[in-house]
Image 1: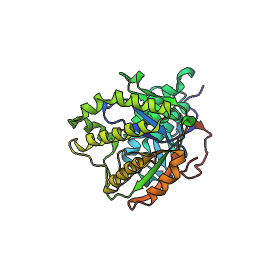
Image 2: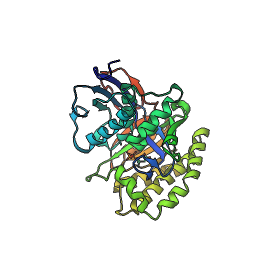
Image 3: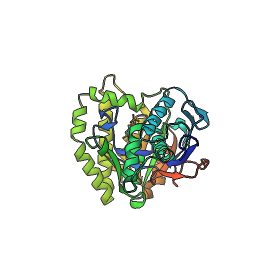
Image 4: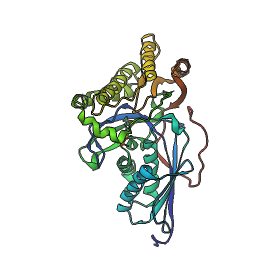
Length: 345
Ligand code: DP6
């Protein structure tokens, strides 16, 4: 084998995910061991495709996202992840990473989950990491976690639980139900915002400064149980209650951290209140908000067009993306272009 003489390349696709029970704060920041377990749904139709090529001729790692050469923190974060992969592999060359998102970058949908899930799957293949066939998903999920915590949940398909684990080897995500188990849809209400929010990575460090943090963590096993049970029984009302409470708890911690983090805009609150009223009026819908102002409105597919129509009628909503539950991260042909738009496919 001439490992150092030739290029090693592979490409992978991954979907972002929306957390029903959120990851906020780490017990170990370096290893990204979270303070609590989390549950999410992959988002079909939204995808990142990434090609990784380890080349003997490169003198440094390169990162190109949506046709644009990246420098600074984005490149450093990917280079540090590739360093981890090289440490586990016989391939020691630098790599070129070419990545495309088919969802609008300015839409405020976190791309780090799909980005690091696709990167982990492609890099592991390209670097020929020794992964035992029986545990491919858990090992790739563990690897993706080191790049971005939520990325570990984009590796398995459908409805996914990240078991926090007590050490590196135990902290990875598993599928609790396939994508077609329950016809849920995420209607993502895009809210315009003037200022840029603080990123999640910084936020995970500040969680512990909130006096509410311990209570959020202590109560998390019960919320995980309620959320998992609601998914497995496809019972929307208890899912809605626990998803909204969990989002509110995370934002309560964010707002009471030092410095305080306010991700909501006035439009965010307007949408959250509207969704609760709609539910009281009989429309099955629940909100959840990540580290930004956009509101993810979870609804059974039969109510999705009504939810989308009502969201579009709110003055603070500039656009709505619609995604049903998506499949796992997977290898794809190299040189495949990104086609299609975000949609319910
Ligand atoms: C609010 O996974 O983006 O979306 O590990 O630093 O990349 P890093 O953080 P990240 O945090 C996600 C935070 C969240 C909640 C969630 O998706 O669980």
